[in-house]
Amino acid sequence: MASSGQWHQQIDRLYGDHQRWLVSWFRRKLGCHQRADDLTHDTFMRLLVRREAITVREPRAFLTTLASRVLSNHWRREQVEAAYLRSLAALPEEQAPSPEEHALLLEALHQVDRMLGNLPLPVKRAFLYAQLDGLTHQAIADQLNLSVSTVKRYLIRASAQCYFALEST
Amino acid sequence: MSESWSTDAEQGLPAPPDIPKEIARQAVEWLVEWQSGDMAADRQEAFRRWHEANPDHRSAWRHIEQVNQHLRDLGGPQRAPLARATLLTPPLSSRARKRRQVVQSLVAALFLGGGAWITRDAWPEWRADLRTAVGERATHRLDDGTELTLNTDSAVDVRFNDQERRLRLLAGEIMVTTGQDTRPLVIDTGQGELHPLGTRFNVRILENAVRLSVLEGVVAIRPRGQGREAARVPAGQQRRFNAFGVAPAAPLDDNAAAWTHGMLVASNQRLADFLAELGRYRNGTLSCDPAVADLRLSGTYPLADSDRVLTALPGILPVEVRFLTRYWVRILPKSSSG
Image (cartoon, rainbow over all chains, first blue to last red; front, side, top):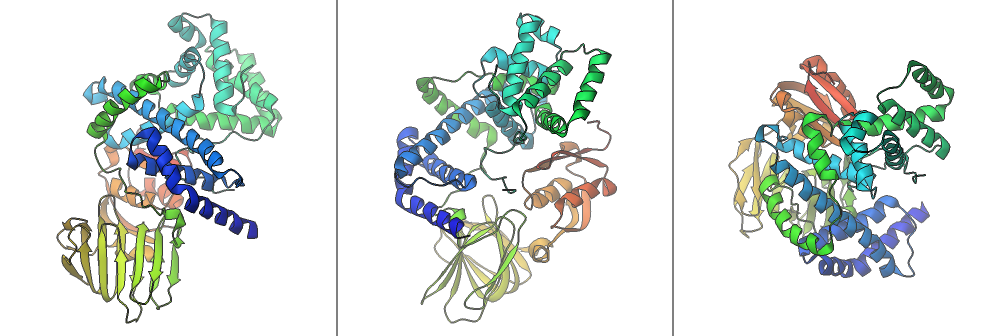
């Protein structure tokens, strides 16, 4: 109990001392005030959710590390969203998802994108054919002009990362 | 921590189970073999034996199935091309990123419309004096005798001094029964201030407005952008307002007070609206197929167990409830096969 109270005090102090500094750090990176506020909020939310011990010796270095992660996550989300909107624009109108499905779909895409991480594009492509279209190994091999054994290797690599966060062998 | 769900968008997919790496690897190999398209009968039998052999095997496989449920939602002939195009976007250089950002904000504004912008206070909700989690409800008696009940996912700052008693509603919904005190009571909602004159009333923050429902007495509304009193709402009425004005009066909503008793009241309500209400009391996403959105339902439902309310829906409406996970629920037409 006491340690949880101390932990909250630490967060409070960190927030009080460095919140403004962090907002301007984000604003320099983004050139946008509104988003700088949002991402500052996200950074502190992350701290709060993780409930990890806080290194108080170098608070700004600590916050910068965390904030850089929030920022690159933000860039990637923007990029995914832009790609989504572009592919959406190419769809015939009757196939477009309803407005309420947009949000769901986009959130699901963000999650899967994070799961796929930095896998090479051909590996991602093979994995998506297997998962989203249910293509057999042979069909994926034909589609991507690869051998069946390569397809299998790709799928094992992608699955090990996506399901269990294992490094590929 | 069991309450690992948060508003942070980092969450959503189930976390990998705590099992040995070797077993995870075996599970992955079985999955890939299943997907190969030509798994012989004896291999299927071998899989069955592997699955039965060890609880860790089963939990590894269960995890794979859970993640696959998420993926399935992105699949199918209509969704798959969209998902593929989105997920196969290569990372951009930072210069291209800046250029794209401008275009993207324009497109997003066109497509997604307004609504999503919630102005965030410099003092965030989690720092508030009083706070409830999703699904939680809490009643506080303040120093002056005022009774304050917070509904699900709500936050209030209490600032009492010699001149005034000020409550700042930062998020969610509150029911206030005012205490006896000579200092004026002010409810600050961001969109404007409320000045109650000895009363019981409910205040709820909506997406772009605030809804005030008065059960007893009178409450004055002072929209922020007008700086003066714009309306007085008597008992039995409710009104929406924002910083710029006050909407016409309406009779009290059935739910204005029902939530304080842990109930959700629907009278001939659209299913989509009902789910939006129920969704406030649970984590995750709750949605319905457009085909069933306009079905109507009536009744009184307990908020404490929203899972049970959902499970009961097929008994009263021609629908089917799909729990993709505990946190991702979708209501579909009955006939659809899933």
